[in-house]
Length: 188
Image (tube, rainbow, N blue to C red; front, side, top):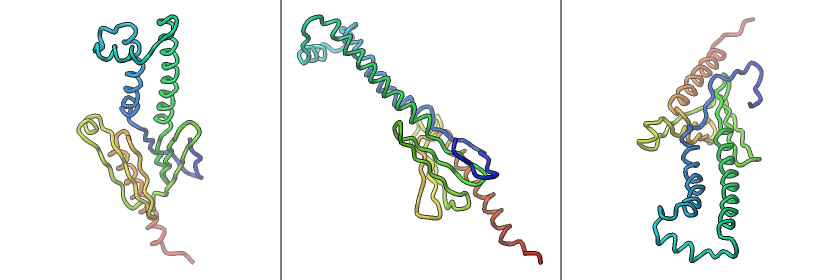
């Protein structure tokens, strides 16, 4: 949880959609299962593929133990890669507070980027939903442009329209509070 300022409360938390993790994990699952098919059920694979692999790979000694050792090493590496994907998925989050938006982006295990921008500095927020599947399961990207030339983008957000509307509602509230301060006459 990011450090909050005085009187700041988290109003909305936005995370990546579960489909983003599933999409990355499917490739890992295919790579994990393929050697098992080659070893335990080679009749399920195309014969040209099996012959080509046997021609490329030559084993000395016990063929079975060599394949199982290589498969175990591959599974260990794929497990580590999966947990890297999961860490990136789980730790990418946007917090909408009553004063600002805090964007946390995890890049690898030991690299995190935390950006904040004030609600009253927002110029525009845009939602982009890339295709039919994204529309059906409700995920997309939210881009927020601030008063400076910077823009912040949250890719793969779950319920991106809800996130945008929440940000814009809080932006309107912050703008109204700012206007009240400017309009109020000072008392002598």
